[in-house]
Length: 193
Image (cartoon, rainbow, N blue to C red; front, side, top):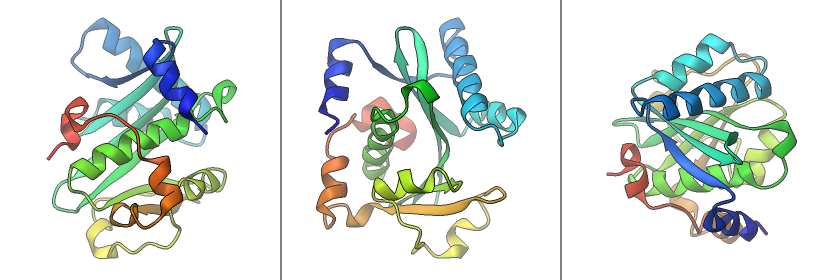
């Protein structure tokens, strides 16, 4: 269904980049654009919190760039010793939604998380985002022991925790097909084992 996205990437119409916080003016511009897009699309999230996540030394941000502008982004954090990666932020610009960009970001995160020997991908989602995550194979039923995530995971008011159990991807054919294509772990060393 979303093969056109990989075609857009291969033709250079859509660029998927890992933002390097120390990458100079171009990287700072991507961070600024991502922060603005997150603030616009996640209005209940305090801007200061968005900026602190984007600049945090233990988070990584992936952006989708179309015509020089950030149209979607995801920020993730690996929690060492927990076997999970937390999606801190994920948003697609409102004019670009329902084109598969959110799924493309999740594909990249899932593949990279899977290569890091993590078992779970967790996200705190509000009511409007839960159907997206569930449609991508995430579950509202949390199987990861609460003691594993409760001390390191911060949720926000009215958020629901959702998880993707990576050990079951091969068992769920629909989800497996959804996440079958992506980047290599070399593209994102923070998730590489």
